[in-house]
Image (tube, rainbow, N blue to C red):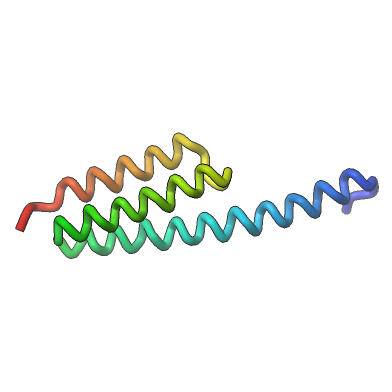
Length: 89
């Protein structure tokens, strides 16, 4: 446990920041999961829309500092590749 005032404050800030990041990442992961489910179903238009929503959530996570920029780019790229592989109906 922290012994100095500054270390105690740091610990409080870390707890709050971790909780915020966890919430943001959880929402992002849920959106990505939804997009992947739509891609699995094979509907091209719906998968494109779902991927846009997922990309929006991923970019929000980057903006809020919950996710590194390159990690987000990698996730978006993989998602876009899977969505593009869906055959048109």
